[in-house]
Image 1 (cartoon, rainbow, N blue to C red):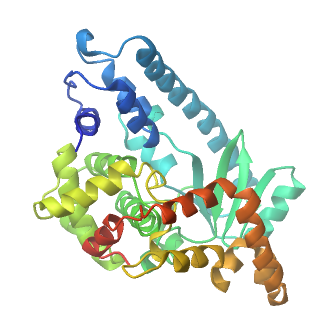
Image 2 (cartoon, one colour):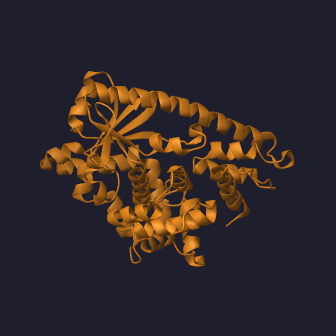
Image 3 (cartoon, rainbow, N blue to C red):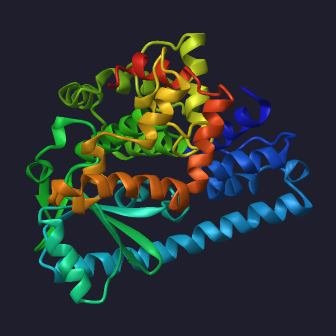
Length: 378
C-alpha cells in the first residue's frame, strides 16, 4: 500500500472513530485523486482541516479540497430536496414503497451531509408500468425504463425505482414482509435488515465490477450506530442470506482499517489482504477505475475474443432487461440486437473503448475473481 493510500485509510479511520487525525507530509494531488474516485472527498477535506497547520495542504491543493467539501455539502441539500419530492410523488401515486441504502445510511454518519450519493434508491410494491404512466401523466421526468427499474429525475437527482431488491440473495425476495409500515404507503427495514441489505448490495457490486471504501464506511458506521450491536444475530442473518463468509472477511478488514468493534473473522493473510486492497482501493467507488469488464465475463481461460463477444452480444435475458419492448414482444429480438450494437457504438462509446483497451492491454486482473472465491460470492 502506498503512503497516500495508507494516509487515506487513516484519515477515514479518524473520522469514524471521532479521533484527532494525525498530520503527515503527503502528495496531496494523489490523495485528492483517491478521495475523489471514492466519492469521500468531503470527509477527507473535513479531516485535513483538523491536522496541524504545518501539514495542511496549501495553495491549489487547499483550494481543491475546500471546493470539494463545499460541493459535498451543497449536493446534500439538493439530494434532500429531491428525496422530499420523491416521497411526495410516491405517496401521490398511492404506491407502497421502501427506501434503501444511502437515504437511510446517512443517518448513521456523524455528519450526514458528508455521506455522498449519486442517486436515491427505492423498492416499490406496485407495477412499474403504472408508476411510469402516473409519472408521464403528472409531468414527472422519466429518464429510463427497463424491465425492473424505472429512473425518474427530481431536482436533477435520479430516483431509481426498483420492482425488486437490488441484491443477489433470495433472502430479500419478499422484502416488504421484512419491513415495518411507517406511513400510509411507506415501509422501512429494521436496523439489522438494513445493514444486511447494504452488505448484500456490496456483494452484488463485487460480483460485477467492484466495490469501494465508501461501502465499507457505511457498514462500519451502521455497526457503531446500532445500539448493543448483536454480532451473532447478524451473522446468523448473513448465513440465511448466503453472505456469512463475505461478512466475516469484511469484518476482519474493517477491524484492521477502521478498528470497527467486531470480533468475527480471522486475521487476514498477506495474499488476501493484497486482493482486498487492490479491489477496494484501486477500483474506486464501483470498480470502474480498474475494470471495465464485468467479473461474470472473466475466467482463467477466457480469451480476449470470447470476452468481447459476450459483452457485445449478451444473452436474451440480458437484452430483455435492457430493452423492455423485446421483453414484451419476442419477435423484436433482431431489433434488440441491433439496438445493443448501436448503443455500444454511440451512446456508450466511451465505455466500449475502455473495454477494448482493457482487453488489448492484458490488464484484466485476477484479483477480483480471486477475491470473489475467497468471499464465496457466486
